[in-house]
Amino acid sequence: MPLEIRRAGVDDASTLSTLAARTFTETFGHLYPPEDLDAFLRESYAVGRQRTILSDPRYGVWLLEDDGVAVGHVAAGPCGLPHPEVAPGDGEIKRLYVLRDYQSGGLGGKLMDAAMDWLLRDGPRTLWVGVWSENAGAQRFYQRRGFARVGEYLFPVGTVRDLEFILRRPPR
Image (cartoon, rainbow, N blue to C red; front, side, top):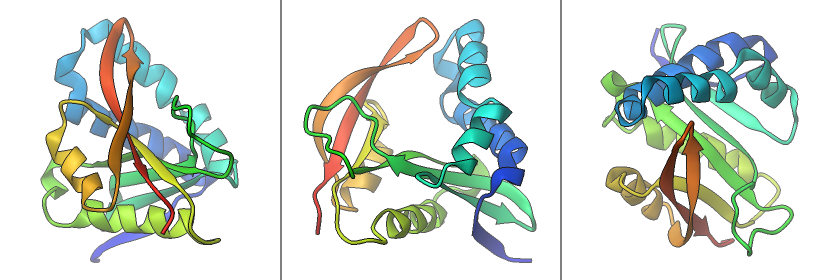
């Protein structure tokens, strides 16, 4: 069975919880004390929290699957970034992760396309994304899709505060 992208549903909450914690840890886990990482994962990626997101029609989540096994995901919804120019109706790419073994093959771009198509389904609107200040690869990825840096904020992971850049893509 080839790689497939599909919209996640409420029944995928446990799968999404496990995958989100795994991809975050694989990407950023080395940056945090274990107790901070554990607390962040328990809160941010709890099954109940994923179920709530998946049941809310304002949010969309897509899974990248390899032979039915989830290996990547993207989440989108209303913008919640702390920027003074965020307006009602603006959309946000909430998170986009692909397991290391599946990176650099264009799969992240396909997930991004699915989320952006959904966010823009009713016409042009401003899109936002937050990205770690030291993740130059992700910044280039978003810049290629029309996003530009317009601000920054501190993203908490336990007691650690990461500098995040806020990127915006105007309506087109």
